Image 1: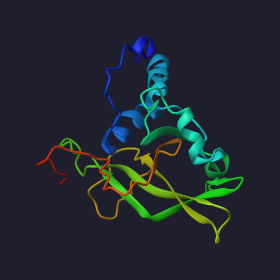
Image 2: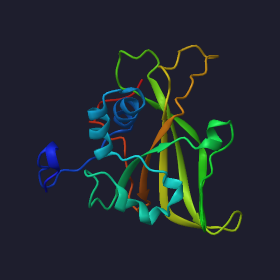
Image 3: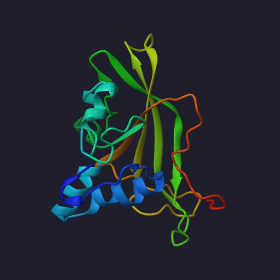
Length: 192
């Protein structure tokens, strides 16, 4: 499979980044990089798209070239909505469905010992429902939304890290019956 100037991707190659890589490499580069060529390369892998304007089953066709043909997961950079920029809540409605957050946000940690507390961002999980709340019908479509902290979270208990709001990075997938471990690490590697 040929992927342009990036070269040829070997058969069996799979784009399967960890949560740490999604935040500390892809999202941070999208937020901080001023090199237009680098941004274009990253957007070939993870495109920028207003995912809430689409039904989840339509999104895989817009996935980046490393997820082309993947039947398990797709990634997108999502710009902050204007309403959200003014302090409101983001709209997660489609014309006949909506994304609903499940549970509370969780902290994503770095395995790097050079980061004092290890906290690099947050993850929120959402499920897509057909219809309108509160009578919508739950589907098998899920999405993890990642946001990065402006800098590593302080180890002080009363210190709250600030989020970088300009973009989030979303991982879209279909719920499966098997146990799924997105943040795969070699055995013996833990987060302290």
